[in-house]
Amino acid sequence: MTTLDNSYWSNRYANNDTGWDTGSITPPLKAYFDQLDDKAISILIPGCGNSYEAEYLLQNGFINITLIDISEVLCNNLKERLAPHLSKGLQIICCDFFEHEAQYDLIIEQTFFCALEPSLRKAYAAKMPQLLKPAGKLVGLLFSRNFEGGPPFGGNETEYRQLFEPYFDIQLMEPCYNSIKPREGAELFVKMVNRA
Image (cartoon, rainbow, N blue to C red; front, side, top):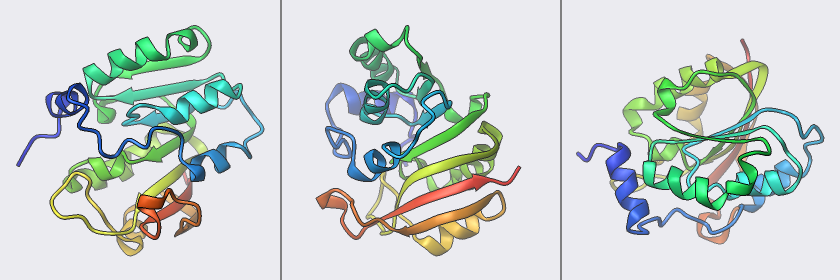
C-alpha cells in the first residue's frame, strides 16, 4: 500500500498526474458561495489542491481564507500563483491536516475526504468539529460511488451519516443536481452544522 504522504502527493503534482483536477471551480460550490453574504467569515479548505475555490472566493471579495495541503510542491505553486492575495486575507499552510489547530466559520470539502485512506475517516469526522467554531459549517461534496483501488476512495450516504451524525446536525446530504459531467450521479452535496 502506498503511503499517501507529502512525497506521494508532491510527485503527483510535479508530474501533472492530477486526474481529479477540474481546472476551475465546480458549479455546486460556486452556487453555494454565491449565496454567502458575509465576506469576512473565516473559511478553511483542507487538502486544497489547485484551489480554484479559493481563487473564486478571493476574486469575489472574501477576505479570510486558509488553505492547507500536505504537498510542498503544490503549496509552493499556490504561493506563486496566488501571490497577490497573500497580503489580502489568504493564508497557505503546508502541513498534515490532522496537526492543524485553529477554528473557522466554514470548512469546504472538495475531494479531500476521498483522498484520505479510509482508515482515517473516523479521525477526519472527529477533527472537523475541533476546527469549527460552535455552529460552524462543513459544506461540500462527497462521492456516492465506489472506486477500484484508490485514491479516490468512494462511499455512500449510509456510511457518511453514521460517521458524521455523532458530531454534526446534518442539514443536507442529498444527490448533487449540478455536478460536473464526469461526476454526474456520483456526488452528494452536504451541509453539516457543528453541534459543539
